[in-house]
Image (tube, rainbow, N blue to C red):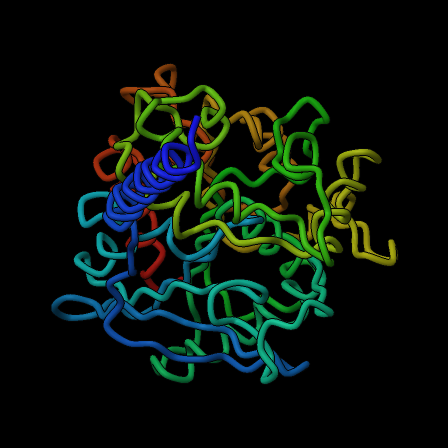
Length: 361
């Protein structure tokens, strides 16, 4: 092969690679997504973090109490607004609720004044003791209400239970938890804890990089590896691709390791072990709607039911989102809140339950 021929081949290969990358880049741009909030606000925590809040104003005459929606581990506000058709945030706003999404510390725009420094760590205790009360307080301040509703996905439902025990949830009128056990079995497929990714890099578990690149492709392939998050039979691949592309942050090693300890030792406790929340669930007395997805591979429905049974509330309702419970499909972990059947079968039940708890008591 002559030098000219070899050079020509290299140039052709480079051109082909460049064209492929250009096409891939154009394809990926369709998965870029921004939530459709009306306003953005910030809640300042006692330890100096600025938590991003996203407000969806109520349509028509607003109901008396706002709703705060909070995400799971390695999650973000995007789970509540990935598509106009499959958006719990927009659904609740249309039904008269002043609806607020939050990104808890360590994701999106939720950082202290210095920004996202790699030296920063956070754990479950921070959410319970600092983030939750700051978010609730700021929401009440802007809305003018004295109480709020709380919708907690997975980890944020667990934070609600812990805050009710710790006394940092006093302004929460009632709560909905979605896929929120207290004791998670070791057989559950919890990303970063019992399943991949297991890597650690500069104080973070790198959930985001892989999901941003491979996630959209896997979504359109209906890959089984995503079944622990979104069931293909109940998911629009565009919604899944958007979440994988935009909604999954890296997570602090301190937080992931705390969850791993809970699974390993069959407990749920503060970081120093002084408060064992799993032994004090009878102190959770506020009204509860506890939802479990029948095919949740991350947070099994049976474990969620155990938490429900242990809670001390006299006003509590358990819903298992599956065919046996009157639903059209056995829901999975994330499609419980963003799946094809979620608006008609999940959102409507949540809204009806909240409306009933707006009445004086």
